Structure formats: structure tokens, C-alpha cells
Length: 503
Ligand SMILES: Cc1cc2nc3c(=O)[nH]c(=O)nc-3n(C[C@H](O)[C@H](O)[C@H](O)COP(=O)(O)OP(=O)(O)OC[C@H]3O[C@@H](n4cnc5c(N)ncnc54)[C@H](O)[C@@H]3O)c2cc1C
Image (cartoon, rainbow, N blue to C red; front, side):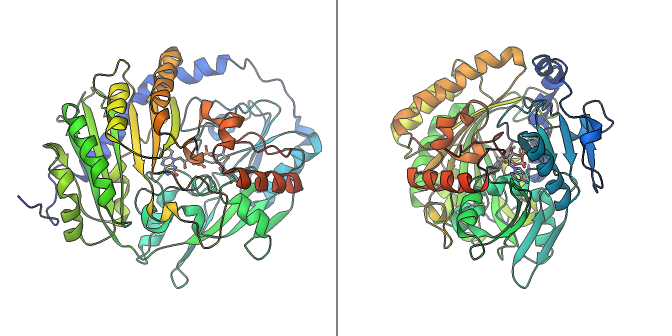
């Protein structure tokens, strides 16, 4: 029977948002995590004293133990547990400059934190941590189809402002990820990435405070090398205070998730690998093998189950979208088929990512192809009968505009990859060794199909080792980044990140 693209699925938005929250319930596990991770550091030694802190801030300077310090270091990934010597809770760009100047005076490293979604480097008592969560300004220029977001803005806020004028950004899967961190790492949009490319490909200008304390507005005209480097080079070149980027005239999506029983994982994955060869650039998609928690908040048909979720976002007509989805819908009988025409503002229901903080162990890689053998090996390593219960293994389809150089080249590399591979598990520190071993096993078993490259935004924890960071860039791009780093951050003040060393 042909699928009616206008039909509302019986289990749709509410189910999927409930699902996201429920997966987040695994954060209950995390209740013990901050205590246990904090053990490693004991009490931080006072490296900064109150007398030496900047004055005249619009935000605040906080030392360990100050009211507000604990709130400011809250993160989404509870494995982060930052313990900076001082926090500059910045309210504007001049506060950021004050933080960078303080670090320069003391020869201290600077770390930057917006939402704490990415575990990149330990933040210890010798560090000046600049937090940006108070920098929440967003403006949308409908005429120019451009938005400007300050450093603490999350995607949900930009989407809310953009849809009011019939536009949409190249946001990530969840509204709570930070716009700046996401964009500086590439920005792989699950809604429109294959149609328009990486978010970094559509940045018009970047306001950045460099290691010398200067606030520079960087564009292709003012500083082509720094403009190239910062779009894909993450926080290696300074603290970004605001970015300006393109919006697209997309009001609705034909999107959502189709969830299949674990027993059908093989049928679905094999259908998916054939299907992706046939789809136009307007179709962005991914497939995830997921273990649903056995808790009441998860809708009954999914509770405690292993499911294969195919996530769809199509920016063409619902009718042609439904036609394109035919082979996937026919792969097996879905538990839920929630793909329907939706306002762009409902984008978060496609992935229904967890919203609660949790201790998350992640690994990643890039695949050049998805063959029958790849799928069989992936199922053996991460499928329903795999020896260790990994929470989620995701394959995202790349290609389309993600595979092409943008009009204004940038540092985002590895555009030859066909898929991202991303593995995530939630667990207490007591589970860490077993989780890490199981995740490493999946990565190892996928090696025959790996491009050898990495995608920066998915690189956390162990994947932030220096040799892994180099793999996020083509060799010529990496050399160009080193040259820019040498020029703008010769002492490697910005090293608590996916670090590119100046020499
Ligand atoms: C649930 C979930 C869903 C995700 N979905 C996607 C997705 O669809 N596509 C995708 O590409 N990525 C995705 N990501 C990855 C995400 O883009 C990265 O984790 C990103 O770095 C998050 O940025 P943040 O500012 O929110 O996090 P934070 O942990 O606060 O920052 C991460 C890093 O970004 C850099 N950074 C942040 N702010 C600044 C600044 N002002 N100046 C300079 N550097 C800065 C720093 O290096 C910092 O260490 C997802 C992550 C999670 C956990």
C-alpha cells in the first residue's frame, strides 16, 4: 500500500520527545558520576587570587568555592568535571578579552565552555575558563537571509527566530547544542547537510578574541588565513564571541524516524545501504542501533527494546519524499513510522536526542562505504546479539554538498567520506573499562571500511589524542592550520581542545 505523506503518524512528536527524555533518564545513572570523577582531582590548589582578577567585568570572575562557580561549570557530558582555577563568566566580548589577557599575564591556558557537549581536554586548576552561556544575543536579517549569534546561543534559539521569517539554519540534531562550538567543528546538519553542506561552509564572518587579547572581525576579505582556519579549526585560534551565517528558505521538512524491531536490524541496514545510493541531495538521513531503557517513560512499544531507527529529513515535497522512502518502509514492519510533513521548528523530533546530562563515552570514525560485509560486521559488533550492550551506534549519510568544496574554502576536511560512524554509551565510571573496550572493538572491526579520517565534532575523550586530531584534516590543510596557529597563538594558549600545536 502506498504511504500517504500527509497522514499524521499515531506515535509522533510527543512519543519521540518522550523518547529523548527517556533516554536521558539513563542520566539517573549519573547521579554518582560527578562525585566519582571529582575524586581524581582532589581539592584544586588556588592558582589565581582575588586581587589579580580583572575588574569592571559585565559578567563575573569566579574562584573555586564562590557562589555561582559550581553552576557555571555544569556540563551536558558529566565526564567533563571541569575544575578551573578561575572562571570568567563572560557577558560580552570585552569580558572575553579580559579573560584572555589574564591568561596571557599568567602564562595560563584558556579553555572555553558553552554547553559542555564535547569532552575534549581536562580543565584543571591552572586554567582560565571562559564561559559564554550568558552571551545569548541572536539577530536574524530576513532580507539578507543571515543570522548573527553570540557565543552562548544554542540552536533552538536560532531556529525559533529564523522560522518566524520562513528561514532555517544548518543546525544540528538537538536544539541544546551550542551554535558556535558546532559550527567551528564543521557542523553536520541532519536536516539539510547533504543539500547545503557544512554549517562552517556558510559562515560570513567571525568575531574572535585572539591570544594577544585583540577582538577581530574576521572575513574572507579582512584575514583570509584566519577565516579559513577558524571555520573547522574549533577553538585553536581564539575565543569566538559571535558568528554570522546563512539561513535557507525552508519552512517544512518531510521527516521523522522510522523505528524497527531489533530482530529486523539486518533487513533494515541492508535496505538502507542500497537505498542511500539512490537518494538526491535533498535527502539527509542516518540509521541508529539503539538500546531503549526499560523505564516507564519510554513508550510501551519501544520500552526495553533494541531498535533500529532510520532518521529522515527531506526538503522536497512530501509526495516525492514518500515515494523515495518506499524501499525503506518495505524493508520490514516498523514499530513506529513517524515520518510526516512537519514545520521546521519540529526538527528535534527526528533524532529525539536526550536532553538530560549524563556521563557519555563516545568514539567515532569515517567510513568510505557501506557494503554488505560492513553491515554484517557492524551487526556482529553492535547489533542485538552483540556481547556488550552499547547504548547507540549511528551511521550518518554524508555526500551531496557535504562532499563538495564550499565557495569559500575552509579547514573542514575529509569530504571524501561517505558515512560517519558514531558510538555512544552511558554509564557510571564503574562501567567505563567495559564500555571503552566494547566501543574500541566496534571501531576496530570497522577499520577495513574506514577512510582513516575523523569528523571533529564527533571526536571526544580518547579520540582527541594528537594523532587523531591530525586525522581530522588533510595533510595540506593541517600544515596551513599549523602556520596560522604559529602566527596567532605561538604559545599555544588555546590548547585545551582538539589541539593543533604551533610547531
Ligand atoms: C546530543 C548531541 C547531538 C549532537 N548533534 C550534532 C550534529 O547533529 N552535528 C554535529 O556536527 N555535531 C553534533 N554534536 C556535536 C557538537 O556539535 C559538538 O559537541 C560541539 O562542539 C558542541 O559545542 P558546544 O558549544 O555545545 O559544547 P561545549 O562542550 O561547550 O564546547 C565544545 C568545544 O567547542 C569549542 N567552543 C565552544 N564555544 C566556543 C567559542 N565561543 N569559541 C571557540 N571555541 C568554542 C571549544 O573547543 C569547546 O571545547 C552533537 C553532540 C551531542 C552531545
